[in-house]
Image: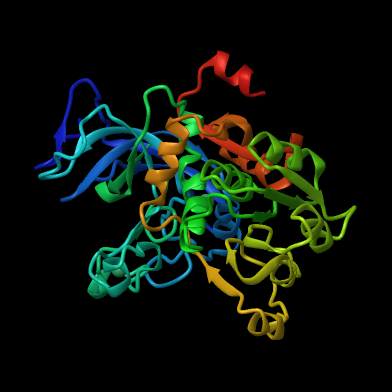
Length: 387
Ligand SMILES: [Zn+2]
Ligand SMILES: [Zn+2]
């Protein structure tokens, strides 16, 4: 039985010595293996993973390796387990941990910075200067589960206490996996200045972050909130999450539509979540003079940018990485208060053993999949409900 020295466990939550874990081999190849259950150190806990959502970034890691960085290089054939959007139950405490108790349900942030570099000291731990430095002679203690350390496509994971987000008792496992997604949208709006009440916001791209970006902007009091995208069914979900207006860019010029919907003026903020090649140039045209654009998506190619318009109009550009400045705690607070229903973007649930099917649904958007969740233990009633 699992009983490492200095680690506190409870007979109410017994932990085995080994667990099932999906391991990345060559690009695109995942295999289910047995791994030892990891051991929490100082300021860490062991989380039993109850549910994990699949993210587009997981697909990039599995197929191309980036942005994961394991032992200074690509993550292939290093016994690495991907997956980063998970929630679960605390089942063991590292030495000295009294901030959490065994049995507590938590969602997780991805990044625990090194805690000692300039950016970590500023609260920008997702931009840690020691990203991936957690091995051999360059061990600075950086952890980003699913990117620089083992992630959550398995049964148990070690998390730094600073990455834990306590969740409301009545929040379902599936909804709790979306806390970090909402937290990423929240971080973007905080970096833009945060005070968006009464200000106009456009969100471009109705993927998971864009849809929850609409929800968070509306919960923060933005008016109007306009969502642009190419698929009517996704835009409708955005409306359900609080968008005042939606624009299908296949049917209408998005820049003209936004100006028309905002009384002929540009908007104060654009949260760019589409990664489409011309989306930045359109965002620059959508904002008013002195407006702010936040980039939250990865485009697949280099794109020419209208710098002339940026300079002439004093437009501010921000890139955000992940879910910094404890934004997930604020996002969970909105969800706890039922300010929006994040479960509108959860579409499918599969058992952990069926991860490859779950990934296929997420990748090919089978059956209009948005957020596909995987659970180690799945009850029959639940499975039916998700289908
Ligand atoms: Zn993600
Ligand atoms: Zn750091």
